Amino acid sequence: QVQLIESGGGLVQAGGSLRLSCAASGGILRTHNMVWFRQAPGKEREFVAATSWSGSSTMYADSVKGRFTVSRDNAMTTVYLQMNSLKPEDTARYYCAATRRVVNWTSLNAVDYWGKGTLVSVSS
Image 1: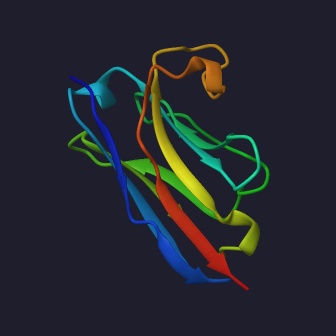
Image 2: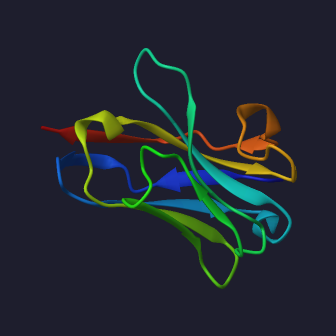
């Protein structure tokens, strides 16, 4: 059974950093592209960053480009989202997701599995 469990969220001041982790079971990192989404209060869930199953390709939303970095460990069990220079507008619940899609694989509709999310709050 596939499980995605996020951790690492918390409260941080603007300009600070956090590293989110997504522990994946079932060997899913060997077969699925991994995507981070976020959802702020009162807003729709949106794409943040993604890494292909091989790790050879990464993608970022324009709003986080240059500040966030997505990566995976060599053991293929955990995906990370390093978040630097955090802004109050980064406040949201962050979700880890997995998809086998190769076309439009960063869209909400492409997701096969979701984690339950971890909350990030950035104070000004």
